[in-house]
Each structure stands twice: as structure tokens, then as C-alpha cells.
Image 1 (cartoon, rainbow, N blue to C red):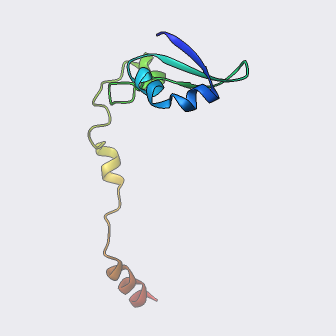
Image 2 (image 1 turned 30 degrees about the vertical axis):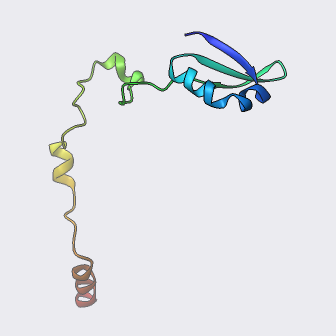
Length: 92
């Protein structure tokens, strides 16, 4: 990836161009004096976040696509709030 450096003043004046160039794959570095302050990078194109920290585990892609049967069995069924209030009133 190629990289180009601009001062804050230059970047302000050319922001549309810099965004277009970043979208095309170029890395833009913005400096204040000689010190880098920010980078404009192209977005990842996949749309899915990669689970890089878990890559070494070789987990299947659909691991979290379905309910876990054990978790589903532990879920408490939702009640209507009116029923809950009624139950509290009659038991108290």
C-alpha cells in the first residue's frame, strides 16, 4: 500500500481528493509539523469482521449462527408484565 503525507492545512484543502485516494487503496498520513497525527486508510471490503485472535482455534464459520441447546434450556420464558404484577399482588 502506497503512503502519502500531507500537513493538516493541505489535508483540509484536499479532503475530498484524499478520501477518494484512500478508497482506491492509498494510505494518507496527516502531520502537524513533522509529527504524524492521523492516517486515512481504505475500509476493509469483506463486510464481516475477522476474528483474528481466534484464528488459531480453527473454529467453524457458523459457530454462532444457531442457538446453543444448553443455553436455550436455561432461558426463563418471558412473562407479560401484567401477569407479573398480578402474581405479586396475589402472593403478597
